[in-house]
Length: 63
Image (tube, rainbow, N blue to C red):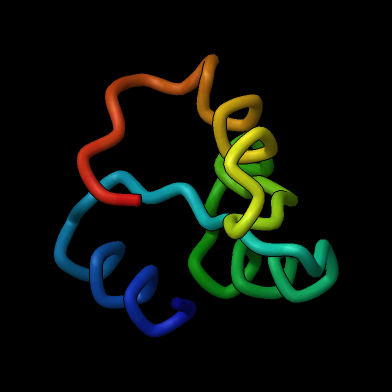
């Protein structure tokens, strides 16, 4: 997941990173200089958490 986010970011895509570990997300956000609102603490295996996390985002092309 992290490598995919890095590759998409490097290619110019607007990325939102999601994961269960807030510390790891913050490290990734810092490394890629992502705004805090693009870091989503969520367990992507839990459909209700994903639905709640993305409801206020612009159109999502890849999840």
